[in-house]
Each structure stands twice: as C-alpha cells, then as structure tokens.
View 1 (tube, rainbow, N blue to C red):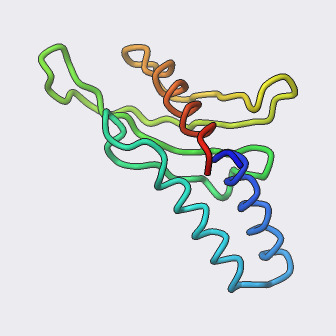
View 2 (tube, rainbow, N blue to C red; view 1 turned 135 degrees about the horizontal axis):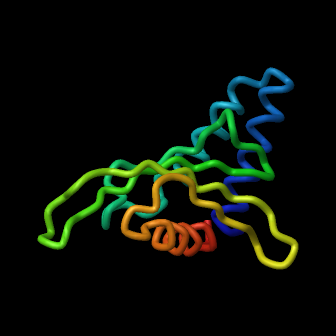
Length: 123
C-alpha cells in the first residue's frame, strides 16, 4: 500500500469510527494518520513539518498543510511560504496534486515533486 492510500484508508476508518461513536479506535486511526504525515519529507526547506487538515480532508481529497523555508543566493534563510498540498484521485494516474500558496522562486514545482515521491512510497 502506498502512503497516499494508507492516509485515505486511515481517514475513512477514522470517519467511520466518528460516525458510530467509537472514540478509542477513532483516536488510533488519527494517530496512524499523524505517524504517516510525520514520515513525510523534512529538512531541505521543509523545516516546520506538515499536517493533514482533518476538516478539509476526505477519503477522496487529502489536504496537507506545509511551510517552506526559503534561502537567498547567499545561503541565508530569507522567509517562509505557506502551502496546501491537495491530493485527489486520478483515473489515469494514481493521483493529482495541486499546490496552493505563493510560487516564490518557482517552489511549487519542487513541492509537487517532493510530495509525489513521498506519497508514492510504500507505507
């Protein structure tokens, strides 16, 4: 199972537990989600981690929030940009990605490439 599939499956299970009032297993499924998200890339600009937005995500639409720490031409940190990585199903491919936020230094391409590789890894 790939990471994006594991996230969607765990989110579906968490929602089912919420619907039927199974608080214990709801928490266990959310913990699984947090562990999967914690394993997404860190460092190389992704210096503050990532979160899955539980309110905007569904089993068919994952919304991951992240920030990117930019560097200037002198190797000094020069600011942050905030982004959502929105993952939706694709009939032709595994999924589609949409990156929101400011495209400072054309960072959206790098974010898309980084998250694509991470989400296609084995969970």
